[in-house]
Amino acid sequence: MTPRFAPVTFSELDGVRYLHFGTEWVQGAMRLRKPDAIELEYAQQMMAWLLFLSPSVDEFHVVQLGLGAAALTKFCHRQFSRARVTAVELNPAVIIAGRSMFGLRQDDARLTVREQDAWDYVMDGTHADAIDVLQVDLYDATARGPVLDTTAFYRACRRTLKGPGVMTINLFGDHDSFPKNIERICEAFDNRVLVFPEVHDGNIIAMAFNGPEIDVAWEVLEARAEVVESTTGLPARDWVQKLRAANARQEERLKI
Image (cartoon, rainbow, N blue to C red; front, side, top):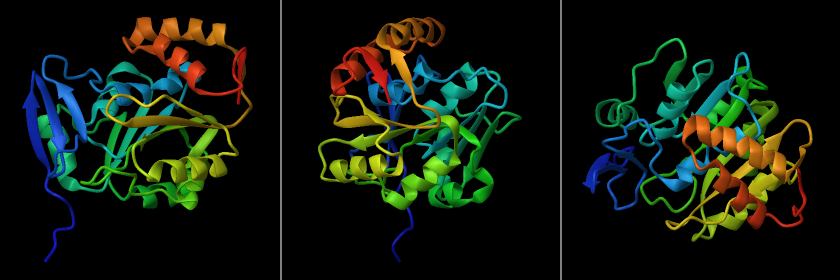
């Protein structure tokens, strides 16, 4: 009988612990001396919603689809003391690994880890218009494309978002799944999508927006990035530079 899930495995190199699903593909990472930091560049870029939203507002809710090594979940829970953080993960072994190998805390008043299919979560009508930020990182052992990638899924993701709300999603640029995913995300979000340049390991982060139109000078975003960088340690100024360089027709102002 074929197991439902690939085995959860680990490796360590140069002070970094990696999560795998029985293959060489990296599903997450944690620097042992900085367990609450976000180690991988693409995962850091998934926090770029901070350029547009403030997690200090009342009832702010961040949802992670696909727990991985829990880097984003841990970071949001630690950094944003007023925010509620939910992680949705189908594989119970990944949740166990997060808590035993990657320092994920037990649930509390602000943190909830749900053993659930991401499809079921976004299709649940009780989550409509309830989420400020949706961070989507859904890969299996082959790590070549998201396991949920239909237009229907992305439309359901949008329905969960407040207005304003942002979805960030990890895509794999070196695979034929990339163009179809971008097309479907654009269809679901009325082309309100920004894309980062590909990072060295092939990942590409896209951001999709719900709610009022954004019309902001790049200088304003750069000033916001300085605040984000000083308060979180994330490379937010680099995000602004890369977004400006990678997205056409956005030379003077960001309009989306």
